[in-house]
Length: 255
Length: 134
Image 1 (cartoon, each protein chain N blue to C red):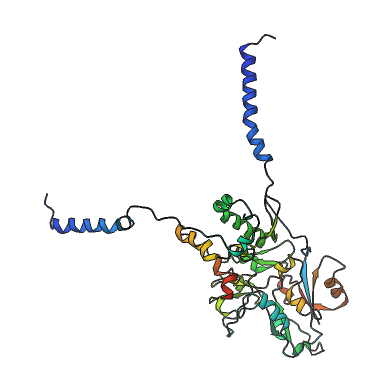
Image 2 (cartoon, chains in turn purple, cyan):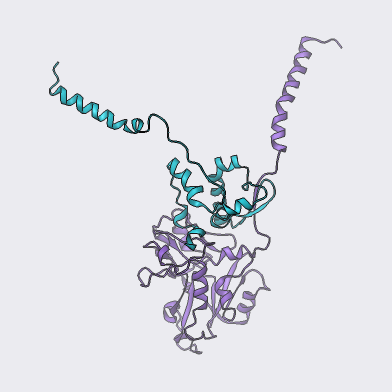
């Protein structure tokens, strides 16, 4: 073959290209990329929900569910109702279900306080009003807060029809009886609320309140017909808080 | 052209310049020496291979971006595990994983941050386990 200048330049060009690509290919081949994964033991669901049985009377002065939650989540106690931070707490029946028209449902349910917490609504107004997306709804239905992003505007406090959100008007650190180190505290100027124990679900544990009171509380996947919550919902008559508002609360009460 | 009170004006200007450049004179014209970071906590001393979750150079340059990714993953995506480039798994937790080895926060975190004049707000919420015991 007659080697012309043209073919020589072609071959030279191609060889140069080959030398140039090698380091690039090496860089792609070198080393595993770091990645982020879910824990294999995590509890998974399409829609988390809670069922609370109001028929079973709580023992006198029992605060096991509240204590369990507030201890592991570093919820402060200021000792006055104005600054109070609440994740799970008791409320009179009439205030929890103001639109319940049946006066005599029996069983003494109306005379007893009702345990309330964030309802993790399907259509959460707090998420809609949050200007920074600090509050957001996860794919599994948990209405979650990213405290890093909260600017303390309190739109969500105004938006929530269940009073499930509390504002830190003061630095909470010094008002926590015993700090649990593996959960963060909050800081002044940040709103907080129940997170359905998402940090426990992520490592395969049930919410702390449910674990503290298995008799009256159940937790599970609403979309799974075999789950504990679905069985309870099918076997019992349940009500939810302020259903006419259309927020679709996912905490059900057996009455 | 005549400057009124020239003596006072120029003395004042000279004093102002001396005052303005005082930090340079006081430090003898040398830049402040970078802080020495001590990383020999008991836990690190017990490590067979003294290595952070990623190579030291990467951690020095990119720890803030790594922590930001961690925060995003844990809080917003609900994914708590980090698989490092060498395949080892770590729970993404500032108080739990980082401070487990780097238990000397005032040495390890604060000395560099003070020198660089950065004020990350991590510790207004995240707990330093070592400070609880005291």
